Image (cartoon, rainbow, N blue to C red; front, top):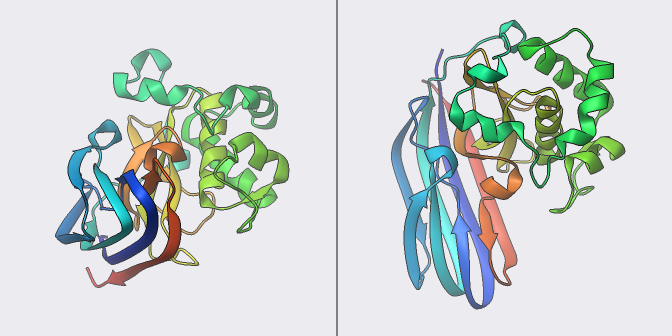
Length: 262
């Protein structure tokens, strides 16, 4: 089964002084998804350049702009990802991991995975690989609440684990930290998905089991079948849709993701 999505995004920010920015809003052109009719429009900028995204997935747009930044993006994306039941996928022995996955075993800014090692060992004894990841996701769905406005850009996986509530990026950070604590490579992915409420950029986790990366979403709002991937990284710092190296004031944001007949 394939899923086709119609995507439209508009960002509007005020810039009181000339500012350098990074924008990541375009669906990545990777084998697992077909991007058709992509179009991006920008208000006037002083500088524009494209650079590869993390792991060569997607692109970052490097900008310098002043006064105001408006970004408009649209595309149709057909998802053709190979899907598998996560619980059935075996762990990959550490000594057999592909080189690019090794960085995702390690702690990162928002995912202090060493802090979770004792919890993982005690809560999920005897489980490994995809079965362990599935149990972690089940645990979160039973014990965590999706609540807007309770976290900030500084909130870490440990903060969320203590409070037991947060939004999609917080859920993704906790799953990443738990997986890494069990020596399973895990990374964040920013995606477009049709059932996100309210409509927004969405964050999910990808784990490397069964010799491939697989999407898991502890919020339950998205699945590998209907996620259009934008970018991947160690945690949210790598996949932010807008990173400003100066003052930027939010004016408005609109995101529309509609399912079409594939």
